[in-house]
Length: 374
Image (cartoon, rainbow, N blue to C red; front, side):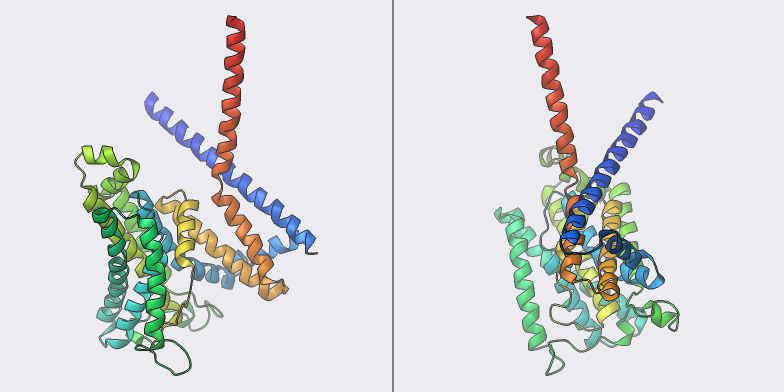
């Protein structure tokens, strides 16, 4: 009983310390952002209020926040899975795009009933992302090539490959590099379509958010309740200890990266089926890298990464509303949002400051003790 109380106390202490770090990060971002706004002749209080209001102050703002957060949830979970298995998957961006183009192709080229067509299209996106993650994973495990280098390069290869496909063999119109529209049987319904225009008017929010949340639930259960989740966590904590305990590093690394790439690819196809309904060349650059950031921001765990992705989506929605309603330059808004994310991501610096204080205190105590001994 005493041991349980000690564990609970330690968890509460850690949570309190993390909350203080996040709060200090937000305050630092607000302070620096306010200085920049004052230099530009803007009212910081008004801008911050409009930023929050744009994200949460209306039904439209909330749905735009969910729309912007949906692909980020997928890429954040994909990044989290890779981090937890000890791999830095910088290739989430490329896997996202490959999954999107694979799903778009199946979505327009195949004609089947919705009950078969939609799951098949989603599966094509998952498999496309997983296959794109396979090559750098094999190069790491069999050839010893750093996955950071190979995944970065596969991002560039994916970008140029898909640009070629949408400009030439899969091009639908002579004016725009895009594929044919996906069949209605493969589309994810938008809320405005389901409600007849009463919910989600002026947004493209869609039911793909429920697919994203289902992935979150499944991955949480996998990490907490299954053997493969346990192996992923153990390998991420210590390679030698895991191998000594009988865990196959090859199987765990490869399996983790394939699922990570598959989730990223699933996010790409969900974005296509729910928002764009066709693949446009470079339709949404940056989701992979922002997913990496959300995973780091969320402490590299499933729930934290999801919350970080929702927060990031809300900030982007608030920035859009701020630009539309107040006419404030988008560059200034991006600086403010970037500062907020930067300081929150740099939360560890507060722990570093605390450690410096503790070290200095320990040195002072040691010097005092030495003086007494003399």
